[in-house]
Amino acid sequence: MTDLLETTRTSEPTRLRRTVTAVLEARSSRWTTPLLLWLASRVVSTLLLGTVYLLATANGWHFASYRREPSFATFSGSWDASFYRTIAEHGYPRVLPTDAAGHVVPNPWAFLPLFPGVVRAVMSLTGASFWVAGVLVATLCGAGACVVLFRLVLAVADARRARWATALFAFGATGYLLQVAYAESMFLLLLFGALLALVRRRYGLVAVLGVVAAFTRPGVLALAVAVAVHLVVRWVAARRAAGAAAVDGEPFPWRERVAVVVTGLVVAASGLAWPVVASTVTGRPGAYLDTELSWWVGFVGRVDFTPLTPWFLMAGRWLGPAGLVLVVVVLVATAWFLGRRDVRSLGPEVLGFVVAYVAYLVAVFLPQQSLPRLLMPAAPLLGSDVFLATRRRAVGWLVTGVCLQAVAVVLLWFLGFP
Image (cartoon, rainbow, N blue to C red; front, top):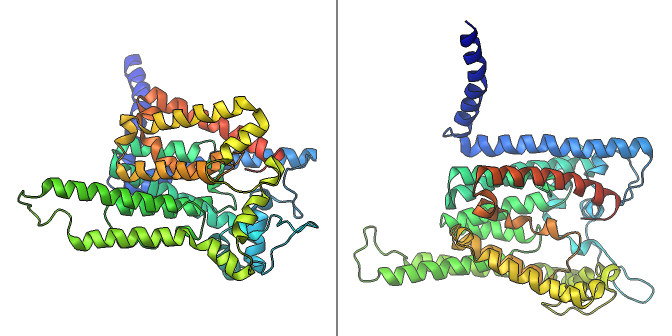
């Protein structure tokens, strides 16, 4: 009888584990798995944010971002979300604000219109404040981003890698951004969707999602590069297959070649459109660039923009010659990482996009505390062996991500902006 009881007790965790595994591996898991992971991650992130908020409020701690209306919703819409609120409630200024010396100061033109536009629509329909509507939109888009990331990794790898990549993304150091009033989760939803459509060769959908994403966050030019890589790969494959009888006709029909080229051009044009819009509306050439450079003043002073120099400028200013060496080491390590076989196995579309996106960040971005946030579009790389070679390694990265998220919440809410 004792043996029977022990066997029953031992089998209960096993039965539970098998049940959970069966649910995750069910045919409907393309929805249920990423949504369950998203839901669990929102519990973790909300607990972290809520704990910090309650402690700070009870003890009168000062936040890095000033808030007129202290509440958990405004706490979840800190930092530059105030600019999204201005856009949602008042639109963009027709005259760029300047200081006494005539230099452009930070203003809403640095932020693209889709996220605040959608939030404004939700505000109108529900009567909610910007903070509540912004958190709601960002959270729902975060759920969508998890679902599409899961399907993207599943399309280029397997179900195990898709599950773990989605978990590392949702529970990672920047996981809290999937529910705060920033445009990140909306941009990731659109971007992952465009990459998935590209892998599945649905070029019209790539163009639509790419254009919409271009008015959500900067960085869509990297998607145009991924389209170009896809074109080259298919073209080369078609040339190699030339002369061989094709079962389903020509491997790369001309209509698809034209569709890929048009898609790439449309996405590239949309990625360059916002600076033109800003200059046209304000009547000031370089309005967008001047606005972006206004955020650099606190880090490197007032400088002119030169592509491919921001990382060296920032490192040299704060760390001297050692900083320049550090940048070179980081770039070499990044190149080594992206050249790994397991990373390349994720497919030319994913690799092409990530390489182009990293190059974009190096070319135009001044590295500071926002860098982890801006690296989120590289999340498909979480499906590589660097993170998932063994179960122990995957669990280690998952735990590390949750711990770093707790650190990030404290540091960014009380010391600086992400």
